[in-house]
Image (cartoon, rainbow, N blue to C red; front, side, top):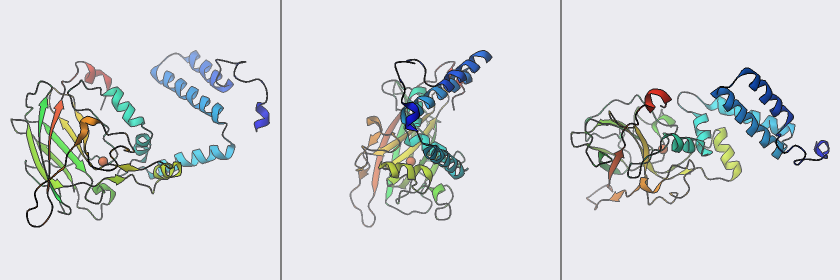
Length: 302
Ligand SMILES: [Fe+2]
């Protein structure tokens, strides 16, 4: 195939990516402008530029199609392989940063990742979200505050995390109880919340699906440092979705989905031994920023 491209290149057609991209653009322009048309044009331009640069063979193109087909086959209600794909490319993190900028002092927003569930029942403050009690106990205490430091009472705090083996409940529904290590709490009038759990372990992203296999083939790590996910919602404030990471985790500098930020690293303190199991404590403040006027009504953001 290389012989077909021996003629003058680059300088002769400095603006044109490919004749097909040009024609695509011409057809779209004849119909009219829209956000969808602009997105389609940018996607076609980017894709064609990639193809011109990489010159994939027919076999490589078929492999790419097979990969995307496999991603689709792996995605279902319990496992969203497409989200995982976007996460490991840094795409989800970039979109989150663009759509959810936070002022200095506010807790940074991060992506939810593929393991969030919205249907977790509410528990009283102090409840234990470890429904199988496997692992080293961890007591989490925190406060939800506004940028000016004012406490936010009646905020909803949702939590989800991996267990002491680094696995989420919806990754092994036959081994962990329903809603294990997931909680939903409401802050008291001082904005405080607390709950019992177990110390999470870091994990590697699922390697049995096409996305995990792609990263392995690239030689890139699949590790995520140990963390607990939080989603905090309160009337009049931007919903905060974030993680709090164990700063002592060896993988803290190579999170596979680009979620670690300095403000999100915390100490999971070891408490003095008291008889049997080791215990830990985590104290944190999560800072919300006010809802931006006009945006939630018009932008359709989740
Ligand atoms: Fe996670």
